Length: 322
Image (cartoon, rainbow, N blue to C red; front, side, top):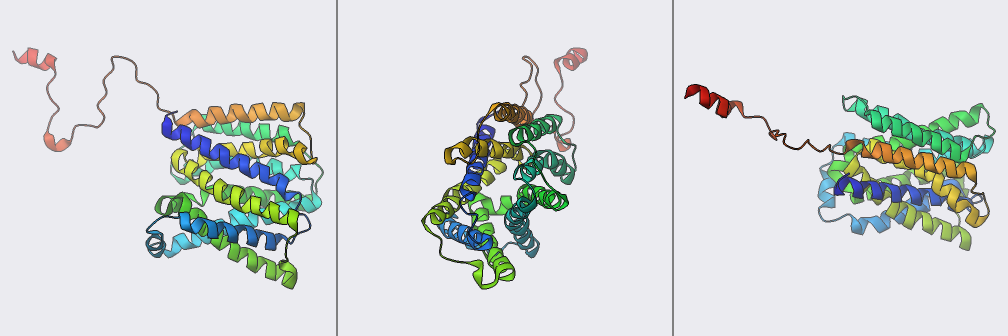
């Protein structure tokens, strides 16, 4: 990989490691109203991201067509608020490993879906790497007890994870990573408040205690501000299909940090799964690297323009004329 793709891979990896560590923070927020917590997280992140959005942000937002605003609202609803709601609903009747396994299949779905939307065939190396990442994520997490509702909500979580990457592709170019992160966090905060009022009424928001406030600050500052910007910067450099490969690092990071708070253990299965995830990431992330040309072979960078007529004569033609 060249310097640009290497930097993009490192940014995507860092973002997914931060998200994986947030699963440990979620374990101390079980008693806090879900929608209220999401509102505080995304609202604070938006306030922190706005000064970092850069000059000309207001003009970019004013020039954004309505269809892209609708896509931003869908991105926040599906990939952020909806994803977190689906995981929470799935864990009511299923063990946490079940939605984790479904979310681990996101690289495979994105590796197929993104090329189809762009009118090209999926890259074999990316597809093979995504399959290894999915198997590795399954090995890290294992499988747990569930029922029909747990499976259905786990599938919704997979849709949310895929949507978080795919829906951002058309708006990442005009907005850039920092402005896009600020906008979707603001939209997600509004949607979280609406969901809280609808589902929990007046109890949707309360003052967090010290431990809950620390966890919410971690999610807002580290996971959302730093994680989202790194994720979209990485996706900007290596594309959605290769960036999503690094989502396999989410269960690996969660498994590594769980023993620190006594909510899990790291054993042989987690080690094998981590190795599979790493192998899949290396295989798929290197799929777009340029191949070196064999020595002594000359290939013009661009074809000769037709308006200039025939290409220059070769020495063989010159010898024939002489």
